[in-house]
Image (cartoon, rainbow, N blue to C red; front, side, top):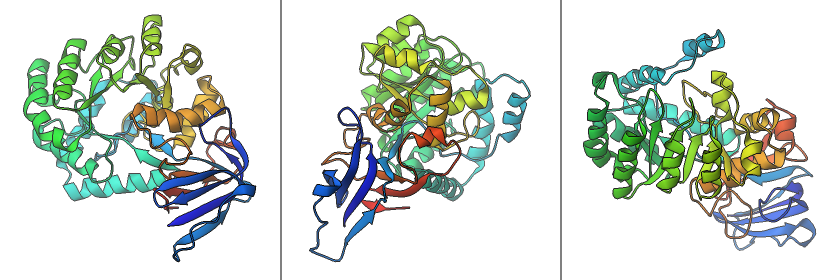
Length: 388
């Protein structure tokens, strides 16, 4: 399939100094074949009937959003917990256990149907790549099935058996870690690309987290880390020391944490939906970017602390409350997410990149923050195929 998208008012490429104006993009199969001025655009291939011309009519085009942190395979609902937080109750990691119970009770088909529903919701809002974590099974059999179901829809699967200590291991966290790094990892690794751990008070210590990550690395999985969400944590330093692709949350960071991140290849993934839903303070993205830290934005879609799948919403919050410019926020939600996943084929618009694009019903990408809550996605291409 060959598609020419032309008459683009503003094309965000994430290449060079700024967007292209009066631009066009040629898609050939699942890749971008050409990018440039609409006046110089080549014709789509006419060797078959599978060619098309799309007139953007002066609207903006951006790379597909890359959501590098989500928890999409789960059952149940925690709306009552959200209501309690809005009434003043403090967020804590323990609520995860409620979702574990509901998820264990659900069938594969029930989990699969809900997962597909979330993916459709994301495509509609412009997300073309998503990472999916396990972490709501917390038994060998359940963690295996969660990563197996996630692998049906994305290559970016993360084994998060070390999410919290399940109820049946209460007071025996080290024994649970033995299970995670042994039989559970053996079962989950064949379906996973990444390994993650929730290194926080109420979840896992730095020593326990190190055991989990090192075991995963030994099995060929690449590390990512939840850290700095509930308070300052040595988990950030652990992530940098182990070469983690990303540290996620980073709500509470010391100056040493920021310096370590800036000197490393580890991306800091910010999750604005969490602070919105938990009423924690928003991270200071301006401080991080000015220090040289590579920042990504993601939704952290989950039933407890961030039940949103809207990257546009996260962009608007990042601009309004975290000190990012609209350009920085869009880059963090596209190229930043790609770097957090160690991907060099998505997140930008250039020849050879995957043909993942979003047509906005707006003249510029600024409108994603300027018009919060308004559905602005007019078209989505995934691997060169229009899915919306």
